[in-house]
Amino acid sequence: MSDTNNEKVRCLIIGSGPAGYTAAIYASRANLAPVLYEGIQPGGQLTTTTEVENFPGYPEGVTGPQLMEDLKKQAQRFGADIRMGIATATDLSAAPYKVTIDGEKVIETETLIISTGATAKYLGLPDEAKYAGMGVSACATCDGFFYRKKNVAVVGGGDTACEEALYLASLAKQVYLIVRKPYLRASKVMQERVFKAPNITVLFEHNTLGLFGENGVEGAHLVKRKGEPDEELVDIAIDGFFLAIGHKPNSDIFKPWIETDEVGYIKTIDGTPRTKVPGVFAAGDVADPHYRQAITAAGSGCKAAIEAERYLSEHGK
Ligand code: NDP
Image (tube, rainbow, N blue to C red; front, side, top):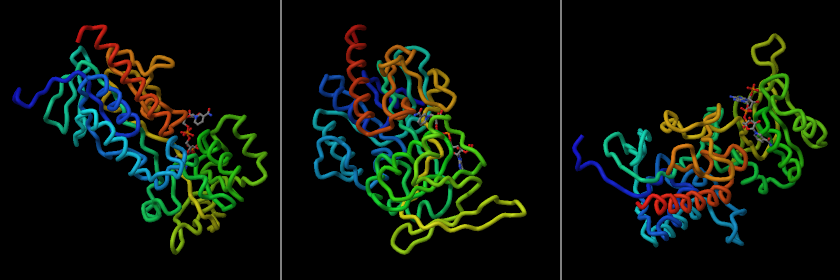
């Protein structure tokens, strides 16, 4: 690798969801001349949703892709250098930190903001892609509102699935919770709430085979007690199909240097985006197993940029 392939920057941001772009807005306005690499999915998870109605400042709502385009333009307006490219390796053993882009170019940076997000897990059924944005969702808080007084299903038996089912139960007519095991993995208190909700039906020992519908989801084909002698095929009529089987934080390339929890969420120092590596910050869903909202990601991106600015001035960089 030649040295001409290397570059030195003061602030490098990896990832282009609300956290990354907000960090870029703040860092560029603070004259840090940030460079942002967009990653595998420019614009992040929100580009796969349709209407966003809960991001403050858009009284009429906004599409996910438009919101991300607006954030990107706002960052570019102040000079953020936004580039296509994927971070493929890191060396955070000592500052300046080294991040390899697309397996070839190495960026040396004084501060690093990790905002690589998390990816919702899907079952892997072809119908999930077929009905993407037409009844299939991995975020009840984002899309639940569109299913007022309708019938929906949530897949999963953990805390997220219970939380999503309870949220949807407050809006929808009927919620089915599709659980592959004969019990819920969620905490007892969440389980009790689910069992008490009059309009949640828990379908234990059910797996999803596929979805059906003409112009969107109209139902799901399920199998009860798959592989057992009393295996049974069951169809349910639903308008929305919500996945809640976990998220995978995109933290793999940072793991040799940065502490993560057992799922892979980056651990930050409580209430801040600071990691244990000085000058390296984590913002948005990659460090947030709990809220996972565009606005909370944006807020943490802002905090990360402010931290980066302070770190640089404290270290005279
Ligand atoms: P979990 O890993 O806890 O649960 C995932 C659920 O999805 C499990 O019930 C699992 O089934 C099921 N599942 C996984 N793959 C499939 C599949 N292919 N088909 C069908 N079902 C599948 O993830 P969560 O997102 O629920 O929670 C992550 C962490 O965040 C947990 O520690 C949780 O406690 C925490 N959390 C806490 C909250 C709170 O305190 N309010 C709210 C939300 C999350 P199985 O049980 O059979 O493996």
